[in-house]
Picture 1: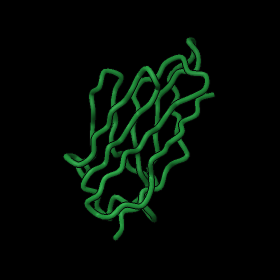
Picture 2 (picture 1 turned 30 degrees about the vertical axis):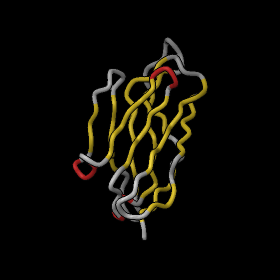
Picture 3 (picture 1 turned 90 degrees about the vertical axis):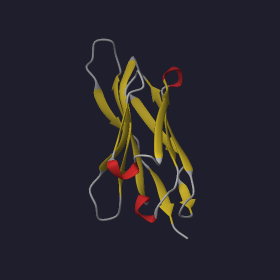
Picture 4 (picture 1 turned 135 degrees about the vertical axis):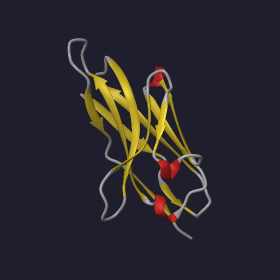
Length: 121
């Protein structure tokens, strides 16, 4: 019912930047919080950043000051600007959205399929 499609991943050198995008499509009545999570090889998925509908943000300590999350509510899209990237930022980045597909449904967490970010020289 709700699909999340991430884009913008790729290979970047240490110190470089990338901008991830995630667009929600399908049957959507409303979207609440949106966020980015990541999973590195051999590690559990972890929170990177979240943003509420009114723009309040929350970041993992490891990315504070380097990453910035934003959203375009009119386009049901969330972004993650990643600067000063480090090799330890290498991971698959997943988008998550709490969305209601219908007016009479509760909020459901939807996940994208992920986009790979590789930081390497």
